[in-house]
Amino acid sequence: MTSVKKTTGKTFSDVERAAIADRARELAAGKGNGEADVLSKIAQMPEPDKSMAKKIHAIVKAVAPTLSPRTWYGMPAYANEEGKVVCYFKSAYKYKSRYATFGFEEAANLDDGNMWQTCFALKKLTPAEEKKIAELVKKAAS
Image (cartoon, rainbow, N blue to C red; front, side):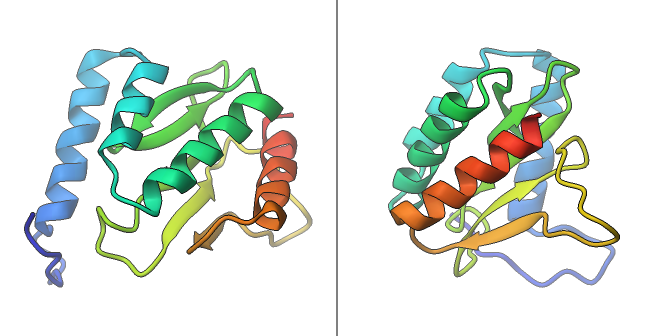
């Protein structure tokens, strides 16, 4: 796999180009195979991303069954009935980052005043983080 290079604003890194290509394929495929696509992407991840993505997938399915699994820029994501992504998992490995990311998009019902958190860095999932993710996903999907 090629390394991530700093961009100058005029070009994309190899990883960014791959994510754009993934997104183009997702759009061309329409809804695709949903859960099968997500599980396939998770299976391709190295540890610890794979374990965290599996746990998050299970949490989302348990607390927000109305959200549909799908891929989004080649990463696991969960969309509402309108097809809008509510939350997603971004692999640390894919982006050569020191942590994975679990985030929420605009369709998430997390508004809290004038400012609220929409993205979380993940290095490890303990029961405390799993509980917090479950609470946020449940609220986001409401």
